[in-house]
Length: 199
Image (tube, rainbow, N blue to C red):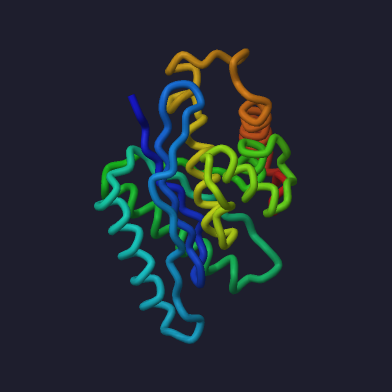
C-alpha cells in the first residue's frame, strides 16, 4: 500500500511543490517536484490566482492522498510573511476543496524529520532529501527541496507509514524520532503560546 503526499512550501515569488510516494516502512519515491513562480511586479491578486491554479492542477494531475503545508511564522519582513501566509491559505483551501487531509508542519519539525536536527541549514535539508529519495542531485532551488521535505515529514507521520503500517518506535530512524520530539515541542508551544525555533 502506498501513500502519496503533496508538500507545499508557500511563497508568493516561488512556491515549492513536491509529491512523494511513501510505502511500507521507510520507502520513499519522488513523483514530481517543481517551483511555481510569479513576478514581483505583477498584480498581487493575479499572482495569487496563478499559484492557486497551479496547486489545483497538481492535485488534479497527481491525485495526492494528503497535503502538507509549512506552518507560517511571523518574520521581520512583514511583506514576505504576508505573501507566504496568503499562499499557505491557498494550499489549505485547495486541500479542503479536494477533500484531502491537511497537515501543517513547522520548519523545525521538517528539519528534524529529514536531518535529525531542528536547526539544520538549507543545504543539509537539500542533501538529506536527495539521499532519502535516492536522487542523483539535490533538488534546487531550496523551495523545491523544502516542498519535498514537507511531504517526507508527513509521510513519516504514524497514520502514513509509521506505527499504523507496522513501523514500531524502535524501528524508526534517528530523524523520525527527532521529528516526533519536535512535533511534541511544537504542540506544547502552541498550547502555552511560546514559539518554537524556526528558520
